[in-house]
Image (cartoon, rainbow, N blue to C red; front, side, top):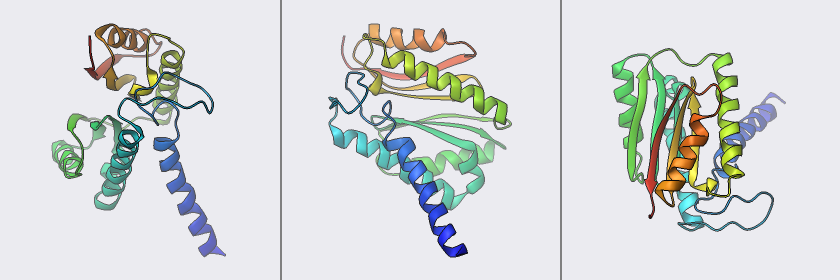
Length: 198
C-alpha cells in the first residue's frame, strides 16, 4: 500500500511540474493574442517553439534536482523563446557559480541570464505576496489589447518582478513594463524583453 502511495505521490509531483510549465495559459504558447478558453491561439514561433521552452525548463529542473537539491530549492527559472533567466537566493558565491554552470550545461538555450544573489530564500509570507504580484501582472497583461501576453513569462521573488519574452514593438514593451511597475507591492522590475519589430 505504501508503494502505491509513493507512485501516486511521484505522479502528482511530476504532473504539477508539467502543468505549471505546459498548461498555464500565460506561458504555454508564445506570440498569440491573449485568449481565454479553448479558442486556438496563434504562435509566433509555432507550437514547437513553446514545447521547446517547456522541455528546456523541465530538463533543467530535473538536472538541478539530480545534481544538487539545495540549489534546486533555491532557484527559479523564467523561460521564454529559448531565453532563460536564472533567479535564485544562494548560500554563497560558490553555490551561485555551480547553479549557473549546471543551467548552462543544458543544451538548447539561446541565452542564459544570471539573476542569482547571495541572500536568504523567500519566506512563506514572501511567497504569498510574490504569487499575488505575478497573478495580478499576468491578468492585467492578458486583458490589455495592446499586449500579446502569451509572449511573456513573469516570475516574482521577494517583490522583484522578472519579465522574460518578446515584444512586437517598443510601445508594447513599455506597456508591459508599465503594468509591472504600477502593480502594488512591486519593489523593482528586471526585464529581458527583445523587440521583434518597430
